[in-house]
Length: 376
Image (cartoon, rainbow, N blue to C red):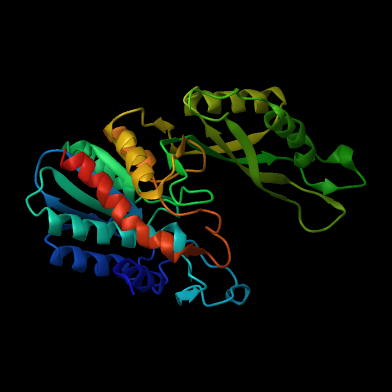
């Protein structure tokens, strides 16, 4: 059994549902310490944050990952226990196999191989791990990045092993992400009997025209290297459960994924203007998950592209699609950031999996990119 497969299995076997790390980082810290890495714990609240470094000074290359996973859902829906790593037909199954314990295992193996081959390498190789990527992402990399910014600690290059590939390993390289802005809206009405609507005020009826306007709007047509901004209602609830009662309020959640043509403040102003124009009595609370970022053409994109071509024989598509990742907290430090990892078709799903052949190619891929940057 290969080193990376064995380590991935060990991590999957630990039920590290956000924010519980379930000992994953202790296992990894012990391995990295044996390889000569300096271990620093940057925990916050219930969240574990591991910063492991080898070398001193020079340019800092960070391998960024998370050890937490989303809940598996009903265990009976899985073909095998989600926290009992299982191999079938060349595929490794288990929660976190693709998102992203497989990549974390590959990071550690790549780092061990790199420092063994280049013990006196220039620059600094770092691994940053958190147990708060799949949750609110408040006490994880966001907190670490804020601390680094205050202390003037740089990161020059960063790869996060998020599952970016579509149909084959390395067919897509993420070079940025849209920003994420969420709103929690409560529209206030007056409860009453459905037979006497004149004595009540239905918050659902009042909210719908405003929501329809927001949903139908074309916010933009895109931005260089970014898809268009999107607005989506994700949750809505109201009512008492009875069919003869007009509810007293309506609560819903929505989200913007926005490109650099917008700032969060401007989107907030636009939403308030629509709600006010429709005369709603409402409360609205905002959460800014992250601003959009883009790594322009530079050393990291070029190195990643070249290594993918050489080792995998394909030229990756380079785009800024998808959701959010912890890369949004590292990019503002001035780092060049790319996302490169396994196929994402099964993430957050029942029977999450990664092809063992592709998992076993990841360490060499990551190591080669690090060598292009730190040893150049």
